[in-house]
Length: 65
Image 1 (cartoon, rainbow, N blue to C red):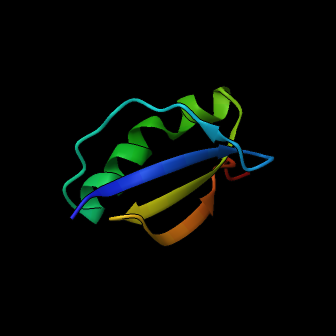
Image 2: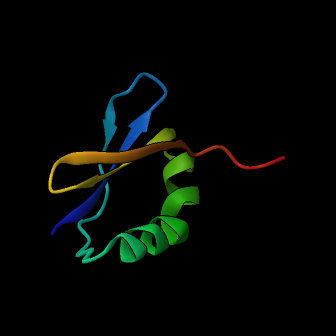
Image 3: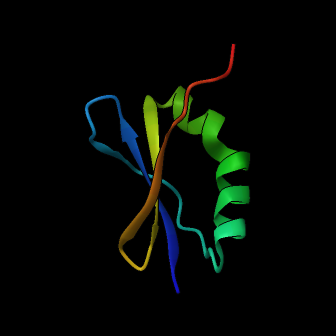
């Protein structure tokens, strides 16, 4: 199984992300936890987790107030 993130701007356009070998959902979630602030600084608004091309879930990347 391959777990990947698609990072999108507010218009749904993909933002380039570094390649990452994410072998499990937990690995993918940890990886995003380490990098999401950098993506937001680049204009990211949404992260979409996929497993072998199937969307598992989408989430907003805004910081809690």
